[in-house]
Image (cartoon, rainbow over all chains, first blue to last red; front, top):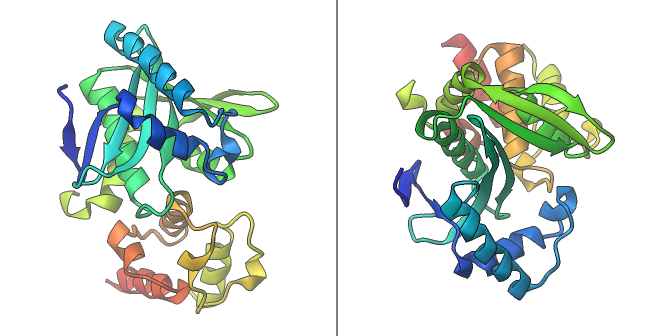
Length: 178
Length: 78
């Protein structure tokens, strides 16, 4: 798939070094960072992290996406990693505060179709912090719980569950296509 | 279907706001807890409890719990 991709009124592309300040602003946001591992508020460190990530991207082992509005204003990010044996883990799903409430849903629908239809993975794994109750509730609508520990719940989604998710989310954001 | 039951079910989609603080006139988007996840929780609750699929536009054009209730009611009767 060639990026950028225009879908649902959003533009999806791979992260670049000059996105570091935006990503850091998301990861340092008090509300968003409640359920994230700690991040140093250090722009140079974030730039170095992206530089290293671009090597993993070139090797095909990780993909970090950013989506913008039609005016190229950044709105959010998500990441695919642990790519092996037709399986992938998705995470780092962050959306800028103040976005339309359905923008992250559009991004998630794009992400899920990218995983199963474009990249042809068979399974997608996620881990969600237990205290992120709404996100747990959301993912449980489509994912199957495999395991949990004191901090996280681990889940997976297969192609069949993806079809259910695609139909459900499309009926909300593009009901005319149902 | 009555509005009291609906308001209660709507309020249960919020984790940090006491359910008793919700009324039909509550401007739910003004609550700090309102987010894409809350919106989907409400949509899933309506789907499960009333067999009605709300759309993004239904939620966008609504301000109060009663607005959502009226949309569900109109779709139930459609």
